[in-house]
Length: 273
Image 1 (spheres, one colour):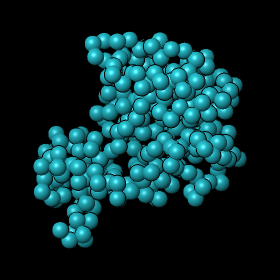
Image 2 (cartoon, helix red, strand yellow):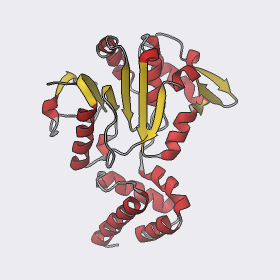
Image 3 (cartoon, one colour):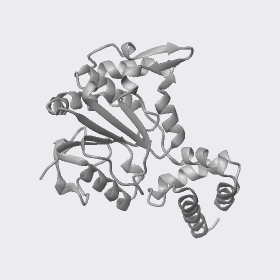
Image 4 (cartoon, one colour):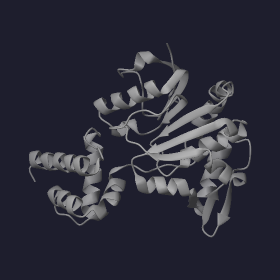
């Protein structure tokens, strides 16, 4: 197919998803999004993007699955243990000075990072004064996150990650086995609010001390990256902390001057005056 026609079909599909269902993928990085659209064509057995658009408009029941295919849902508990060690050493001592804590995990996927942070906060004696807002545009992932049930077979890797992250307890203290699943402890879940939120269209939450948005911005174009970073800048209190993914940076952002670099290797930043 002519590349120009394919690009136009993709633009029309993204516009249709936005106008009809308010899912805004129009400013996502086009190369990676195109690959995911191609996977969706195979999954829905569509011969063209136009056919997929037609099905999305006339068969709304397929849209949740389409959104799931268009979003990247890859995560582990305590993924990148070195990052969590840096958090424990460089961020947690300052968070401990606040009488109450609000933390935003943007792009929470199925909740693995939210539960990881909740466990770390509990180990540091901070969970009881903390409220974590975990957000994503994928409602299916949010339902899984809120349920807090993971494949028991994944817990071996999660346990090793937790150990390498400097965990101050046994990970098994924070879940119980039920059949083939691992159910996260209620004392973690009651401090986490899972919510539908789009970095492309929605506004900020109330003032936060820490915002984590790891491995999300790499899927956005420059304009949407700038919008998201502006939201984080607005949401953070003065001297609040921002965490990005290992391949993401503030260096060339419109908002770079609003943050000081705390840890370059682990992409930790702090809001400045």
